[in-house]
Length: 290
Image (cartoon, rainbow, N blue to C red; front, side, top):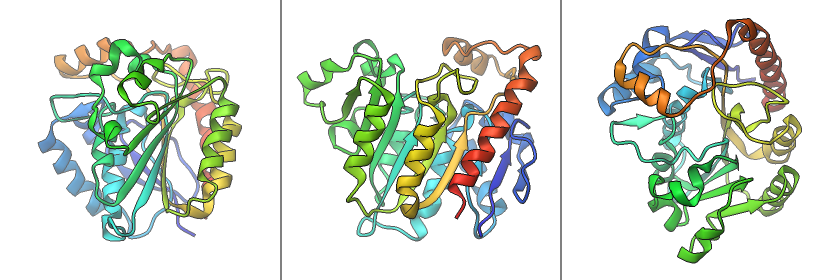
């Protein structure tokens, strides 16, 4: 059995039995939210040296670290190729395919994944963010959408405009989370490609969990039903979306963080909400366990 790994940037995951914890707290301010390409490559080398040869689901802390999924997926280049490709399935309330001019950002990493030769397609499930609405479309990276490498599966956001520019297959809209998951799993039924699964818990409703970001509409059973259906094909996975309080040292990251309007978290709520997160992690890890 491959054991889970905790990349401990922000001390938000807590202790999990049998998990290997790697201390990356010294990287928190450098990597969190976004970083330049030079620092990202430096961290990549550190990560490669620190990961065990075989490991299970990786937990990374706050969704501010979701761009680390790119590095974990890149590791799979050793086993897969354009002739033997994988698909990447991401649960996220945001597309994570936005333009970022200063390196790699937790909201920009998906386009890099879509460009990997051994990744045939990327699906982002559960988006309710206006990042994919008409007034923010220019902020998205268009190439993977027009080249049919990326599909947004969305709720509660108007994407009807996409049909007018030939992107109706890339922008899928559904009336309910049940409809979205049912349709996705129906289309995956005969697919045999291996899958890398990435879960950002901000895709879940605030009725289920609280995260650092604005949240979607899915329930826990939507994640569990999907995992159950695709589990034989999962060759790697990660979980992010933990709750943590962070004050950036650099004025630039403070500015960017303020522009994204992350919700304020009171110390009074922090411990209780982190405990809810912890329990959900145990449920997800059990579902993903090989």
